[in-house]
Image 1: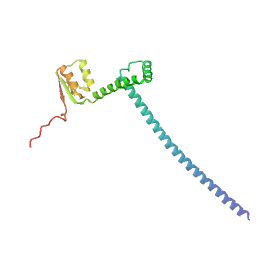
Image 2 (image 1 turned 60 degrees about the vertical axis):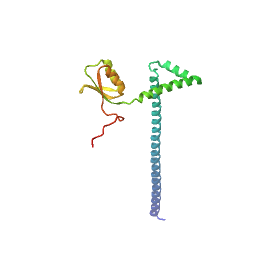
Image 3 (image 1 turned 90 degrees about the vertical axis):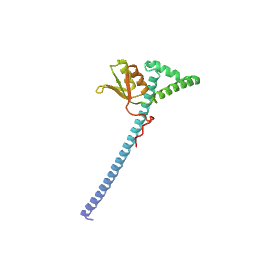
Image 4 (image 1 turned 180 degrees about the horizontal axis):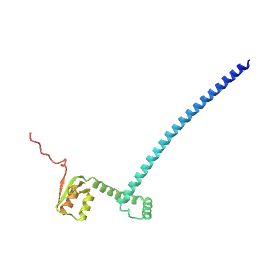
Length: 187
């Protein structure tokens, strides 16, 4: 075999090895890229799951905090609240049944208050009203419109009527009631 031919064969074998290595490297790179994409997808799904859990936990905490507020215990110090909850958690069945009854009555009362129908109202007074009455109108859901010199907003009619009548005010509904009969147009 000639030296030239040996060099040619060595060159071919070296080239084949280099090509094989390059293919392996390419496959490894593709596999690594695919693995990193799958890992990134798994990380995103894990982050979504953790975010959903955190949101549910925070929602539960806010709801329980609202119950503390509704129960009139918001001003209590933390140690007293914690002691109350610890004692309530170890209560017997009779006491828990009493707690259930009291709590359900309070929740029913809150639901009844929330079910009151709010409607768009306008309230006009002939003269200035006391600050206390203005605060009551604001709490009822109305706001003062300086441009029109009137109170307006969505509120419960009976509550606003009580405040307005005490201070010689007039209450108007801004849209007709659905249950009121509408006159028919002339044919």
